[in-house]
Image (cartoon, rainbow, N blue to C red):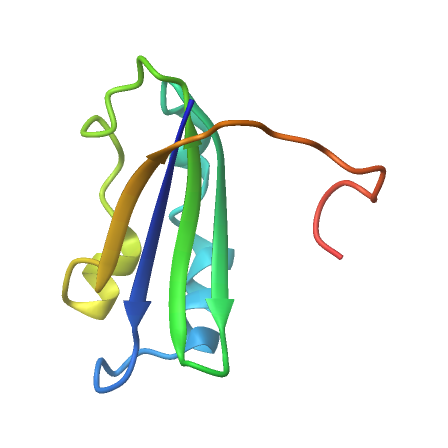
Length: 101
């Protein structure tokens, strides 16, 4: 399994965490549920550093190039400030509630 982490620095982009969050509520999510080999995509934000991003877990065989258009990159106007992929060594799920808290 692979994990891809992407971060955008929103300074001077004209976008905010709130504007990107609102966009997620309207579009750009459903098509990700149909991507072959994608286990989960988690959108993340950090108000302290004004960053927006995503964490994606992929099956090893997945073609990460075969994905929907990156709506965040379109809105922000640039590719992720930082993006890397790493091997997932282990996953443990705790007993917490499923979904957003």
